[in-house]
Image (tube, rainbow, N blue to C red):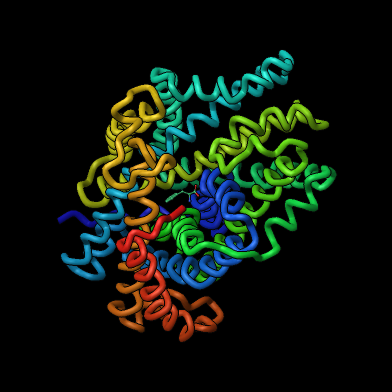
Amino acid sequence: MQERPARENWASHAGFILAAAGSAIGLGNLWKFPYMAYKNEGGSFVLIYLASVALIGLPVMMAEIVIGRRSQRSPVGAFLTLGGKAWSSVGVLGIAVGFIILSYYSVVAGWTVQYLGRCLGWSLGGFTPEDATNLGESFGAFLRNGPSQILFHGIFMGLTIGVVAFGVKGGIERVAKILMPLLFVILFALCLNSMRTPGFGEAIRYLFTPGPISKGGILEALGQSFFSLSLGMGAMITYGSYMRRESSIPRASVMVCLLDTLIAVMASVIMLAIIFGQQDRSQFGASATILFTTLPRMFYEMPGGTVLSPLFYLLVALAALTSTISLLEVVVSFFIDQLNWNRVKASIAVGLAIFSFGILSALSFGAVKSLSTFAPLKDTPEDAGFFGQLDYLATNWLLPIGGLLIAVFVGWFLPNRTTRDELATAKGPMAGYGAWKFVLRFVCPIGISWIIYEVIRGAKFN
Ligand code: PHE
């Protein structure tokens, strides 16, 4: 057998953090979290979300990176090397989930590209009162327009394939290094701007004053933390496999969790401040489409909006891109590591397959009736349709199951020697190792099983 070439590594420690944060920060933070916080009436939802990031998300993230760096493989190979044949099915599950999530995620990501284009048009050509009244309608028309849905989904998949084809250092790391800092700057500017608006105070109160919360809201917060931190399907295993030996896993994980959470909270402040600044709030409902139907108008009503609105959609598109890159990388690295394909061929072939499957989601917003009403798994208006069903399946079932199996594997099956060694830093053993292990062995499995149990019992996630 041929000797395996040494695995490609991130060029720097910061490279890993930026790439991993890039994977974590995406539509989950900028699109899903704000409307979930709004819909679940803020305070308690945010608190429970924070608790589940700290108690379940952070330990599981460390566990995933340990698996990746120890094995130097992407998920299937990683479980095969460290756990044997039976465990490798967890890797296979991860790849399937990556395939599924990317297929529909890229459709929404495509909308952000469309809105970036629209906002550029409005900023340059003027945003008329008719444009303002037509926002909802024109978004609806865009959703029902099959060819444009496929076109923008295709554009986004094309961008993603392009980056992944260039590899870890030349593609993923280089893009993350440019885009992530830019993203922070734009978001920071938007946040500063929102402090001057009348809705700011109420947004802060809404987000940080705990109130009553439904059981469904608790579960939703837990599932969202998995989705937002890119956990449960092997993205962090894959990125961890490119991590250098000298980098500290605990430190990197804490950093990624902090950044991801900070961005989600900042995005919520920005959006809720805009919403609460409006006289007539009735139109907002609990709609998941706020980002496209109401935000543009608010932008053009506020000072600096002509600059801020295209910047904002650029930010969302960039954040989505660094996430789609990680989703594609999980699937592509399987073909590279296990089947010896070359990177360019694997990126194109896998990317095209995912694009094709994603067409079903792209057409499920009204373009094709049977796809739009498809609801074998869960029959609520929000989840109906091919897109909604896949998102429900992945976020509420597959990610928690994957996370549970990963916690059990690292908590109960990997020898202490291995985990202690991986988590140690140059300065010595990790502080709080015992606590981490305890949480991974007991708190995570029990907490996650509880979610799954509730789902099986039919608790609604909304
Ligand atoms: N974490 C990403 C987001 O919040 C989505 C994602 C999920 C990416 C799972 C990779 C794996 O948008």
